[in-house]
Length: 234
Image 1 (cartoon, rainbow, N blue to C red):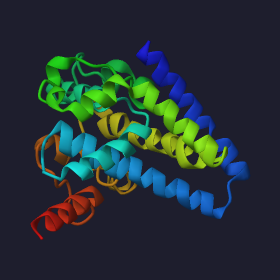
Image 2: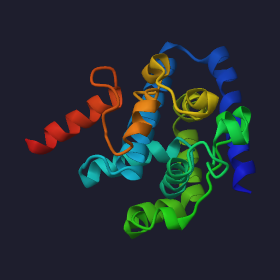
Image 3: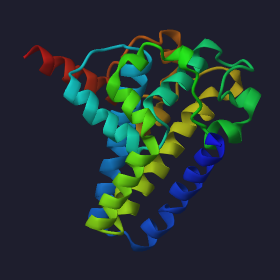
């Protein structure tokens, strides 16, 4: 069921780029680009990936809540689902048990159908966090509330403020799962790194998963973490 839901979300989010191209004005494109940045950089690479999955840095509770919001509306599954899949990926990388290996699952599946599955054995530490458990248990309900709010503000905002950025985010994440794992092993791809806020230096990440920095000067996600650490000390 979750696999089909993920596929449906992917199709809808990609199709949403059509009305965005046809009818979106400049400021709506700027909002779309900003939301893409927040979903992918703050929600996915900084929070889901480096903070929750690998515990590679610390941040305040209010920042965790803010980052969770952007990750949640990014429609990649709940925090528990995402981290469960990602930890399985690292444990079984490039084997048949890897949940999104392009070699064993196919490049199309790896890129387009990142199905949010969950095995609680991989996220026992996170099930102690009431905020994450609430987000997981009420995942769809919270999405409906977000959709209603957007419709009340501006019906077209559901495109430029949500679905189009989701489509761009999911496509970029798909590049990491498919292209950056081509040939059966992770690669460092600078151009992917730029559009994914650091995720493209994927070989470096796999060499030391718990390290928050994947490139000393070009990893934008690391720059955000550095800022968080700097502010926490002051």
